[in-house]
Length: 443
Image (tube, rainbow, N blue to C red; front, top):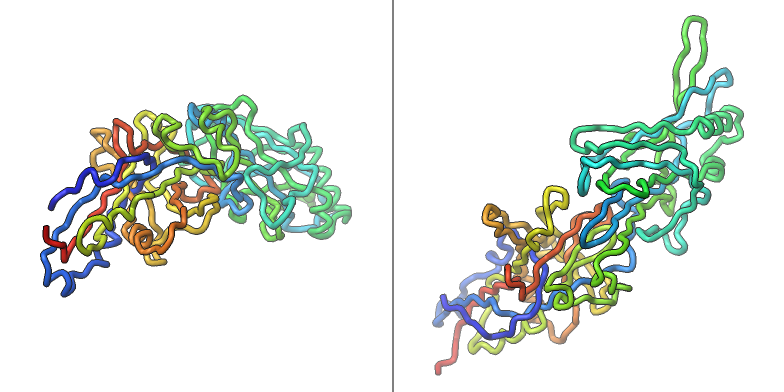
């Protein structure tokens, strides 16, 4: 095998992926054209790659898979803060006339997701909403949306999250609210869902202003996170306990739920991303590009000179194409975790999201973390792009589309990544093309 060098001037790259599955191996069949000709296979790793960072104006979070709450300070992305807002509805509108109020408690079931330092104490502040959660337009609420609530806490809890060990946390809620809801239901002032939603707009769960610990996920599943009103009925020999649960209202359209996810005061380069059409070249960011889910920061990749492969004499075909990109050393640790996979999406020239990238419209293409040489700090993401590069070669005209990297469930997490660029001295991000040439013209 011969390596072709110097064919294309190296550029900038900062995104990668790895996978153990070769998506393109099954595509290549050595047919008659190959068997009847002198064929050679070359590895090309000097293709120009343009890498940059973009930021979506907002991310839809009303369909997030979890409740996200917490806050921490990040040396790159600034103060990362997640708050959650939700409407609630009772599972019953009937309370016995002889019943007596007992207490009210908010239960939140941890769903095993967390990001950053869970050894630090975090705070949960429960607020009463003053307005129904509705989008300004359309049917969705976004990470940048705002909610109106009373300043006074309905309840609060300071705790050290144990998302992998604990199950559910309980927060005592103000008895003033408890009696208010109890009386409204018992006295038949509230008899249906519409009346209740008009009377009680919902709750917000906010981190403490000075928290610097972690962002934690809580389950949205029915019966997992809810507010429970306890009351009792006195009988001859005992007091019988009963309760009403106020569940997340997930059946209303639009859904009165969203996670507000913000990052304040990131590094100066990231502050340049004022709208989704702004692009921060890796060359302007110390040869790095960035990814942050929840907020919508994505690493952006283009292959502007891919068609120069046609300058090689003879007919040829792509056998494989692998993009390799390395997380910047020192940018991750046991708190700022590297995930094993990243998703790959396609955006147009205006950075509007077109679709997730799939192999043969079946399997999603992913960036997979290669840890084979982790002990030597040689870890990097690999992305199998054979089919995608082939599409670029066959395209009749330039589309100026690009690939972007975002974490899986980017609307329900706050994962962040700092990735090396193509010209980084520590690890040169590259695209390795395996190209078979046949019917090559003689000198």
